[in-house]
Structure formats: C-alpha cells, structure tokens
Picture (cartoon, helix red, strand yellow):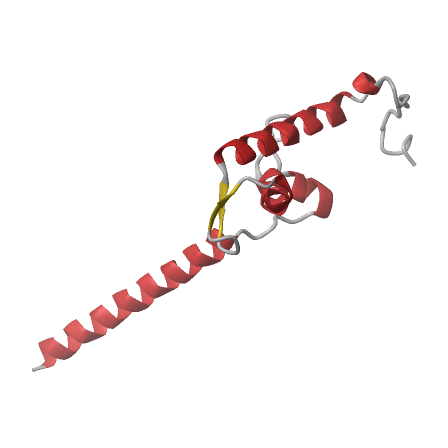
Length: 118
C-alpha cells in the first residue's frame, strides 16, 4: 500500500528517535505548547480562573494544533487526517453574530419603510 502512494517507510529504534524527523518536530511543538500554557495558564470556566495543570490544557492544545495551518503543507492536520476542518467555538459565534446583524438590518429597513408610509 505504501508503494502505491509513494510513501517511504523508515523504521527507527527506541533509543534513536532522531530518525523520525516529522514526528520529532511535532512532539517538540506540542511540548512547547504545553510548556507555554502551563507557564502562563489557560483560563477555564470549570476551574474558576486560570489553570497551570497540563492535563487540563491538553484538549484545548490538541484542538489548537489540529486547526492551525502548517507551513509545510499549507493545510491543517484536521483536513489532512479527516478530510474536513474541525469547527471552533468562535466559528459558530461569528455565524450567529452575522445572522443577528443581518436580521437587525432587515428589521431596521422594515421599520424605516413603515415610518415613511405615514
């Protein structure tokens, strides 16, 4: 199967992980994300303020990593892995705000038409 898709397989030993270049880079990036979030803290509603517990931060960091466009592929890992982008909480919020704005604009237009009829 890997030959069909042109994938080159490299096997590494447990004690020489440097041969796994891309995996090592991803692990380094994730370690950096965990380190920074634990140093500064991430605000969570469940914990009444900021938390520095890395276990609590992992789901948010995973979502952040999977939805960021990577320079090497110009795609998000979510698209490459699943074929679709994960929805972020702020995406649904923006959509609701746009709908509210368009509804308010149409209501304003109807109100002005009603006032002009008098």
